[in-house]
Length: 203
Image (tube, rainbow, N blue to C red; front, side, top):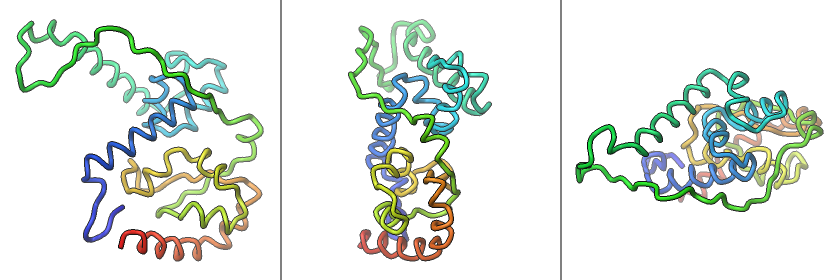
């Protein structure tokens, strides 16, 4: 949340919690940490499209089909992780006290999670509308006659946009195609009522 008295983007705890929650939701969707890093950068849709196009869930197979910025983001992450894993090799055995570093002792066991991917039918029925300010999800669901859980599942990173910790100034909101006309007819009202709801919550 951002207003004249509060900016959650500068709150390390709130922004970290929001980012962590989003990454765990992405992991439930993608079941691979490199794909999670890619989706965190580009959003899930380009990654899901690459999976659909290649039939693979291996980042290195998907890499050519991802945005160039996302490719570089994942490679930078891998490089950084590799340096920290081999930190003594680069700077010697005596690691300065100023560096907080935990040497991995064994491979981390994957958590058992329930997979949940968009179906082909869902992808065909999705429409994307770009919004410049958050719309209150419960209000959006009520006014457009959309199941709230569907909105939440189709827009896993929406909470980041709500809390003003999203990486972009606009958000690509996924809604059913058959709700497009209703959305644009009610867009101004949705924006006005959402502003009031968010303002009331911040008081």
